Length: 497
Image (tube, rainbow, N blue to C red; front, top):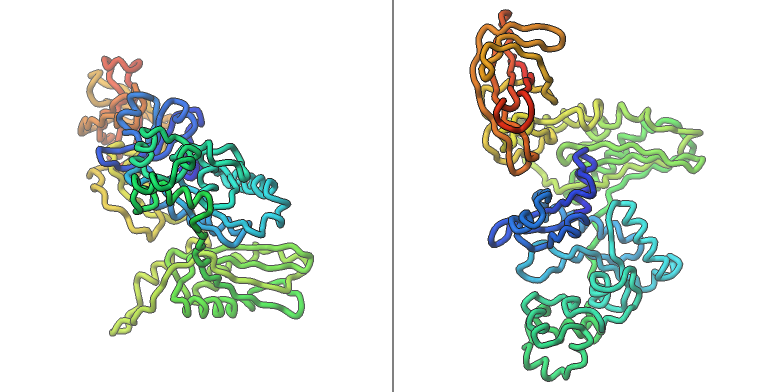
């Protein structure tokens, strides 16, 4: 939920914090709640419940679909970012079988590293502050074992350090829902109750199997009798090329081709291509200056990468000079070698991607985009902008005979008509009057009840042509007898070429 809210803030579509919001995912019997914000949680919306049931409980609930794959990718990146505290970090999204989503978290083996941060309490406080700066809320716990830390972080006190696990519920042992339900029926509601029982009786009732179905295995993992080491994945390779200078200089242009060639040689050995580049200069006064460039597709062409910085080097403040220049590729993708065309023709796709990169480097990232149809019959929602070379998803085509030029916001106009529910005979737009010579319509477009606010009025669209041959797309918002407001209003939404 935190990641989705940050994405909405960056796109300018953030909703008020006091509005109940939830993310949904597909379940066995329809969409179910995947995550909720604080307002939804206080309203009684629970994770795992069906969306239709929660809408009945909370009519003001706003529901969007979750992105589990994107959440997992973001969690993996966060695990690498967390290596600033210790080298052994992994992403943990364990959840009981059959449930939606997971209890996303990070596991850090801080053995021998807490003293570098002023002790265990100071280290946890620093973690909480840094995660908060990223817009993420977190519950932190420190314990001798993976299982104990997992239990305390989710069921223990805030920022727990080696707290006892006996009072925690048996669900803190990372058990399946059916196993937890069975233990509760047997009167075993806490970890302490389970630990006080003879092991032989538990071994007979729960034969050895999957850890999530065997309380003995999970209990041994919490107490440390069964090892559960943190096997962190290898960090991604670092692609970087440096130029160390004997004397400070003010312009890195002469060294840029060599840096690009060295970086591309490293990328070629790993069969990777750069998607994002960062040029850093280290000034003699201790200051650092950086500029970045992006590629629409993975590339390891030295000349092309050097061109991306050609018109941007002037943004670097050289100060009194710099004696170290670094070019690195923070983001890369796999790029296998391609066989040349037998006729010797160039790769048109590669040429297009390089053209996009050059235009983006000159005019900015937001200057280029491609329009993608969206499955919506509301005109202003029927398309969206995606990166120039992104693969468009399969959606139904946009309705035909719509104007090529749609206004970002429909403009209200004054209309004269002979029949109240009929087409306009004359309208005034931007202090100019237009007399309608012919028209076509109406085309009625009803509100999308699943996302429009209650009381939203329908629209009747007309294609009109004035006496000078100009063609417009107008609509009347509402009807006089619809009971959803005052008199109908008229708007100009688009112009035909």
